[in-house]
Length: 278
Image 1 (cartoon, rainbow, N blue to C red):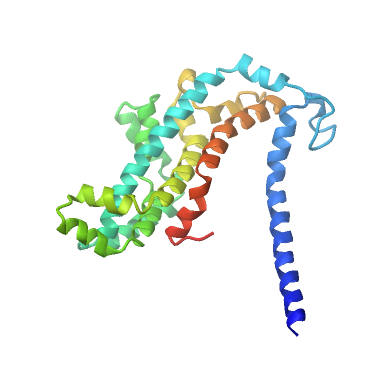
Image 2 (cartoon, rainbow, N blue to C red):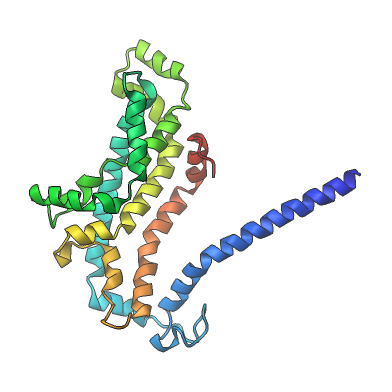
């Protein structure tokens, strides 16, 4: 009976692993195709093999550096991504600390309002935000790209969930010992939530780095544009140059991949500490 139970458990665990591996490979197919296409001849993109090329061709990458200001746009994306992520973390930490540590009238209603902002599609607020940015004279500037999105409802929600796991007695003890509100936030809540902050940093940076519509709407000067805009630079009226476009996509993916590898240890741990396992 015990052997039969053990065999059934092994079959169940094996089936789960096979299913997970199958889904993982399925999700990697677009990345494999992107990488393989970036090294193909243009004639091979849809005529040859799907995932490999008969010749290792770097013409797509050379065309990227020859025809578009790739290094300038990569620097612009880095500036926007880093500053916007840093601002969202500062605002998110301050708001999450207030929601987790303090008791004040209307706290739950305010947090509910934060949750609602996560459910509003960005396209709904794009036009009024653009008009406000225009009135402030921030069009065609990094300020116009960064400032309107410094407050992230998702960052506040995730950090608040992580701060709620910190025993309140630790915060009260810090106050009794003479810590200021900033000192309590820094020495107690932040130090016990570093894994969640690391995971959130990766998520926010990926979203800001890949943002396409808002920078395209605000930045009209070509020298100010960000890297995702480069994806449309190889489109003609009736066709798309797939090889250089996939080369841009591959190069754009590298900073995100490096950041994820650097924060990999804290990534899953951060979700576990915030109560959002997955």
